[in-house]
Image (cartoon, rainbow, N blue to C red; front, side):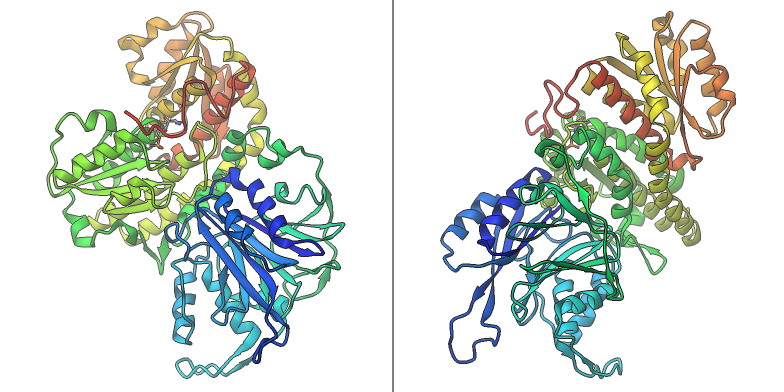
Length: 635
Ligand code: AGP
């Protein structure tokens, strides 16, 4: 998630902004910048307010921005700052925030995604605005400018002229009415020195009053030194900060008195948003990842993955898909295989990149290679991409890091919009990968005429519903997961089983458990048990099964009965309402009813939480497991 800071008061703003941005560095970013209100020279034509905005932006670390600011001598008591994790537009100075209006008198920083930025940008450009970046955010700067300064008649649409508000807070409220999407926004205007206008919808904003000024940030950690009494702005609320105080209004401009929250977290807890570790924080971010990854993907009733870089005709010629990846990303590929073959009816092979790159795979011009990588820098996956391209394949990347080597070396790329994933164990990025691969499967099926537009729309809606289903699991299954963890924490090994989609999910569950709790775990297709693995079962041996309602549910239950008969401790992820399963399971963790095709998005969540609980019970470091790195940039 990007980071926002803002200050207006009696002290030097740039020092406060840099300190705040440094506190937000842990969240991951690729560029940073500030906008400072400075006295303008008293020359003819100088602005009446006597103030201009100085915008300083850098790619790379906040330290680089800090060193550039150290040479910036002009004093400033009001400013805003931002650390950017690129989602629209590569990391660059031009794409870094703050962004400014055409006249340079308004600057804004923004967290979130503007879904309708393309049409807004087209309208603004038609009305004469010029854009300096590729970002969705810059649209806000020009919308606020139009609302502040007013706009002339629009002959193209016949819309009459609109007078300007010449009030920043009013202009921000007006701009927000035109935006569809999520925003945490802070804006300054050189014609209103000392004022910061703030808006919030679906992206966190906290505001606080210190002894020497007013503060805004996207995360408590950035203002905790100034005050522990903060207002957590709610959706549709606005704030106007001045050196003297803060006023709050609703969308209509009516004054409101939001509640004040006292923060008693320490710095470490604040970095994790109040969660005990990054892994739990990131698991809880998964509903947002589903929503953000789907933003803008259904335009005018049609699926939109134009980053693919392939025409519909080229897509239609695809007769084989290879998904190449490592670890958890490989498991996302197993799920993609089920979907692509079920819906598009073309062969899909999933292969560890470390194998693919050395075995001289059969590639033809009608082969689509999909490279999946959270970090976008896994050495084996990169090598496999290069090999595939040499052999003439089209390569499509799915990654979480804008401008990463996987993104740069693929013909097209989808970004999973999970924001920085800090815990070594991949969770939210996996969910983003599965959602993105589901979109690809839907597109292939539609292009090949295997699914109608209506069916795709219906499936897209159901896909979006998984966000609420994950939220239900997070809110209701904690106790069941805790009990299941107690039951298996002292085991020496565990078996994860499932059939169909459940088998793929079982593989991810086994990896999560072993990589963070060091409890050995393997995954098998449940039908394989009698071909060897069942020899492992003795009294109390944990068998963790994915037995959600599916075409192979009964077969899975039969396999579990064979395990139960030999004394296994049976833990099951099942569909809410399934009481039958309780006859053989020692512990049941429920997920809401869901189409089998989407069950991986929801049924994986209990296994993530189970692995984390067991790891904690075994005294392991949940965020930084031994021997592991967040990205494996060597073979
Ligand atoms: C998963 O929890 C691990 N962190 C690991 O298996 C990871 O998925 C694998 O190293 C691939 O990383 P990538 O997605 O960044 O390419």
